[in-house]
Image (cartoon, rainbow, N blue to C red; front, side):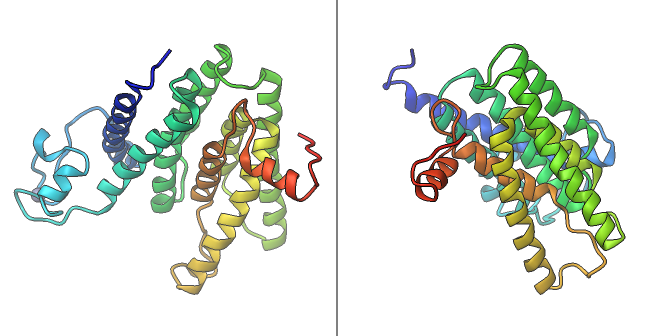
Length: 273
Ligand SMILES: [Zn+2]
């Protein structure tokens, strides 16, 4: 067992791993939609094409030391790079604290990284590349194959049908009402992957928050005139945020704090799930 004395070191390790993965995700977010290799060549400055030295590529720290400018050409470096690294580091640390050092933690953390990358890509390009769907299914198959999740294979399958199926039905309904494509197929495919991880109950919770987040995001974007009425609003970020919220409110044994709270307060202790 992991003793209390070494747990802080484990947390520090998780944070560092998360920051480094965040740095890699920046490469993934930039290259996957452009069909470029994510392993080579090494990262270059987008201004002067100069290869970035390892000491200028340290998550967050380099951004601060370089004062957000390229060492060579002084082109500004986007705040997004340290932001992705920060989110990735903090999520890894928080998930470790919730799931503990377990195989379930590793499975969940991989899905979390996938969702962070999808969020930024969907905002930029309005697509969820199939690479992520395949990655998610591979993680799901491994997790179910080795029994790493508090779910049976059947429960995973019900989740897949629930999350993917409801998104598909909403999309079809939206297309029928608005006479244009209301939801991308990428969103439905992402729903299938996430549902297989969450099971039906948590899928419903994640869907509920997806629509709340999506509604808020649409409202804000329409008010600030960031999109015209005819433009699409990416739904991937809302699905991702809702799923992360669901994963972050897990209780011991696979339950969820929000579901518990809802049924103890709204239904006077009658807990049906
Ligand atoms: Zn440069």
